[in-house]
Each structure stands twice: as structure tokens, then as C-alpha cells.
Amino acid sequence: MKKWLDLLSEEAGALFEAAGYERELGKVTVSNRPDLCEYQCNGAMAAAKKYRKAPMAIAQDILAAWQDRSVFMSVEIAPPGFLNLKISGDYIAAYLDRMGKEERFGWETGGTVKKVILDYGGPNVAKPLHVGHLRSAVIGESMKHIMRYHGDDVTGDIHLGDWGLQMGLVITELRKRLPDLVYFDRNYSGEWPKEAPFTVSELEEIYPYASAKSKEDPAYYREALENTKALQDGDPGYRQLWKQIIAVSTDDMKKNYARLKVEFDLWNGESTVHDLIPEMAEELKKKGFAYESDGALIVDVARDDDTKQIPPCMILKSDGAALYTTTDLATIVDREEKFHPDEIVYITDKRQELHFEQVFRCAKKCGLAGENTVLKHIGFGTVNGKDGHALKTRDGGVMRLETLLDDINAAMLEKISTNPDIPPEEASATASTVALSAVKYGDLSNQPAKDYIFDLDKFTSFEGDTGPYILYTMVRIRSILRKYKEGRPQTSDISFGDMKLNSPLPSPEKDLMTGLAGMNTMLDEAYQDLAPNRICAFMYQICNEVNSFYHATRILSEQDEEKQQGYLALLYLCDRVLSCCTALLGFDVPDRM
Ligand code: ARG
Image: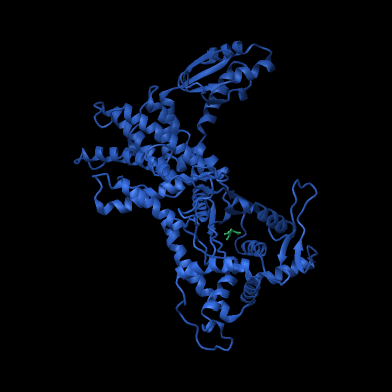
């Protein structure tokens, strides 16, 4: 169905046409002066030059052409030629009525369905998830929901970091600490142990230790490089040990992602494409794209019109080892082969922009990606603490994702527990649900590329532009609908969806209705720009309007039954719209809070 403002513009265009002007002049926008009118049209000013006529005179012509009040219930002129418009109550009610019945609230998706690989999450094996991983997971999951709602065929791939130097570092350190493990015995021919010789906490202590040591001890670093290469070349003991590292590490990741309500379709990683690398490198050499430079294999990707320097894309290091670029290129080959995607979308920290620029250029130049495959990188900003620097723990360490979630859960539980209506056994689950909305909304309400400050007090507040405020409003709506039903225990077939919306007078009710009319426009914009922040802004506006309406209106005690049903129908639509939005953002709504 047509977008609300487009529809109004068409109606205003018809007035222009009837008065002898071009239809296109009838563009309608939301009023800059809500005290005067709901919508405005500046077409008379735009027409003045073309028709060599004063804007006020043109506006008069439009006014004269306006006879039918079924769309615009009032049209007024304000100097120097503004058309101030108010919408008829029946017209908005009819639009919403239809919107409520149409699939996807009348969002016209154009019917084109894209096949998309969404590469997000991107945690590294053996390293604990930290706050930096929060954004990729939260933003990616929401984008996945948005694209799926559009109808796209989306496959989410976590793309584990499981193949690079970090693996060599962990193996090197394990070898030093536990030299007697069978994995290090070249002559071992028995069965490989089922149990991992370490726990996840041990693993998470080993990695930073080894990483720090490699920076101050060149011999240790060399060893780690050699072990990385040996792993990549297929050393049987290393491969077995590596599998154990992945198993222990991913088990732990799964718990964290479950807490975040983030689900991946594929748990592939950099290592998935290892076997494709030699052939790919050979091809690139044979076709003349890749050449040797200081022992390394590189492809030039700079262009004449570059405004900044784009270094060559390195395919293999001088020792023949694969790099981050290599696995990303081979992953494109693999995805092309298995999925023939229309689009591959990567969600990472924006500091990886250059990396993806190189990879994309190389993939296109060398024909690894199909000509029509769109490669898109969405870079996000940093999560900062209140001091404006990257969020740290109190003692200055890296903030683990787990700690962050624990902290916000605890803060939420404290608040929820003050509500005597919530039984203690329900409080903890409710607190987690609300806490997740706080984290996700706090993140998603910002444009992805922007840094933001993780402010626990602000994020968990029930007031202002926060997840808990949105949920609080939704709980309020549902409680009204529930109470209405509870008041009529004899009536079994109450269907809010069949109740008729009121034809509103200018009032909070009408504001809420015109707000809701923006739903399908918002969905389209959120999809086109992959911008969950638009969903948040829309929800916040609707929730503010719901609360104004709630405070100004006696709903449950309204005596006029028809009017009351109109209110209920409206609240029911709000609930459906907001529930759709929370699902797209990726969090749940509690029964009470
Ligand atoms: N593991 C990487 C990191 O921690 C992110 C991976 C993103 N995806 C990709 N295909 N490069 O930075």
C-alpha cells in the first residue's frame, strides 16, 4: 500500500492539478509548526517562478480547488504561500484500518528477494568475548531480522577467527606448559583423547599470556609463527588439539550468544576454507593478478583515482602462511560456490574498513566474486565508558561481554525487585528480559558507525529513550487490553482486531494515529539503509504518543462503548506494531515489570 506521506502528496497534487498547476508540486511533509497544522505543502512557493505568479495567489487557487473534505479537513494559507493542512479523521482511520490488515503493515517490498550472506559475530577462538563483540552480534542479528521480514533469504555466518596466529600462540603455550600431551608426540599412534586438557577459563588465561609474551620475546614469537604454519599444513597432533580448543571455546560462546538472543545458521570459520587457498593462490598467479614481492604473494588493488593510499592485498606471507585477507578471499570463493549470493554483508568494527576495501577490490579484480555480487561492509563505532574512552572494567582491564551482561542484569533485578506485583520467582527472568532490551536498544538506537557511551544508569532507566521505557509502555498497553477482557469474563470472543478505530479529533489520539501511519515508511527506510536506529526512533515516538494518549484519556472507564472500542482497537494496533519492532531489534517483552 502507498506510503502515508506519498498518499497525502498525491491528494495535494490533485488539488494543484485541478487548479491548473503541475501535480508534482503537491509534496506534503510533516508540519514544522505543529501548533498550526499537522502537515504542510510548500508547492505554491515552488510554483511561483515557473508560473510567474505570486505564491500567495497560487495558494489561493489551491484553496479554491479544495472542496472535498474527506482527505484534508482543513486547508489554510500562511504567508508567503504555505498551505497548512489537517487530515480528516475518517481518512486516517481508514488508512490505519487497512494497514492493520495488510501483510507487513502494508510495506511494499517490491517482491524482489535477495539471497544474502550475513557475516557477523566474528569472535576469535580461545579469546573471551569482550564488549567489542557485542555490537557485531547485536547489529547483525537485527539486520538479519529486518532482511528476513522483507522476505530475503538470509544466512547468518559467525565466521570464527580460528586459523591465524592466535591458534599458534595458544598451541605454543600449551606445549610449554604441558609438553607430555600426546598431541605433541610425533610418534603417537593411539586414539586421540575425547576430553580437552584445559577448561575455557584456562584457555582464556593462556591466550593473553602467550600474546604478551610473543611481543617481548622474539624467539617465542617465531615459534608461534612456526606452529601456526604447522597447524595450517596439517600436523595431525596440532589439528586434534586445535579441534579441542575450538570445541571448548565455541561451547562457551554459545552460552553468551544465547543470552543475547543471537543465533547463527552457520558456525563456519576462517579454517573452513583452508583447502581452497592453494588453488586460489595458484589461479591468481597464473592469471597474472598476483606476483611475488619480498617473498610474499600480493595483488595490487590501488586505483588511479584513489584519494588515499590503498596498499596491495597480501595473499600469502613469505613463509607461505595464510593471512586474514587470504581467508576472507577464499571465503568469498566458497560462498559464491555454495550459495551464489546476491549480497555478502560484513559487520565489523569500522577500523577494519581498509581491510575490506582491499579484500573487495581484490575479489572483484580477480573475479573471485561474481560481477553482480554486492560486497558490503558495515563498520560500527566503539562502545565507550563515561570517560569517553573504550569501555573497561573498574581495574582497567578489557570488559568481558559476560561481565557487562551480569552487571546490567544485576542493576535491572534491583529495580524490578522493588515492584511488589512481581513474585520473586519471576523477578530474575523478567530482569534478564528487560536488561537485554536495555543493552540492545542502547546500542541499536545509535547509528551503527557512531561511537556511543555505555551508560548503565541511563540504559536501565524506565524513562527516556531506552529499551526499558519501550517495554514499560508495551506492558502498559497489554495490561489495559487484559483488564478490559478480565472485566468481561462472560464474553469469550473479544477480538480487538475487529473493533473499529475512532475517527479522531485533533488530540493525542489523532497524533498517535498519524504516528502509526508512518510504520511502513519506517520499515522501508530501515531496510534500505540497514538502519535499526530508525526502528528505535519510531518506537520512541510511538511510545511517547501512547503515553500522552493514555494520560489524556479515560479508556477503561469510558461509557460510550463505540468510543471505547475505538481506543482499544488503537492500542491493539500499537501493540502489534511495537511487537513487530521489538522482534526486529531482537528482544522480548515481559508480561509485567
Ligand atoms: N574475527 C574478526 C575480528 O575479531 C572478525 C571477523 C569478521 N568477518 C570477516 N569475514 N572478516 O576482528
